Image (cartoon, rainbow, N blue to C red; front, top):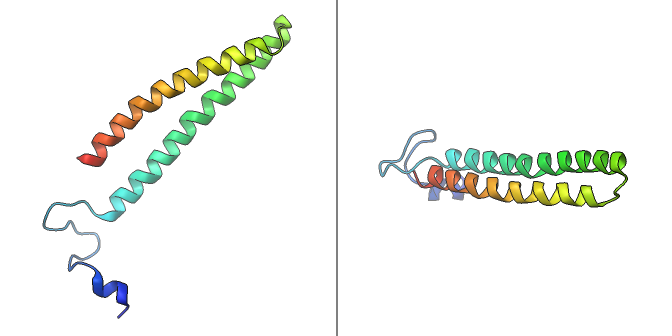
Length: 95
């Protein structure tokens, strides 16, 4: 018997402990979901803003001002979305 197994609670894997605490696997999945969601929420708007900004700069020959403007808008919206998502995930974590 491994020493780490001796320190575990008597609750079997996959079962909910008697004090209604959620299993560790729930929190691991939640953490992975948060990381993936936040990563996509940051990367996609930045990439779209970069693409649109470069196309607009090429069309109106205003290098790099429209790119910078698009990135500022994207980062502002991303920050707003992340705050909203963080509150949702906080409720999921505390539930």
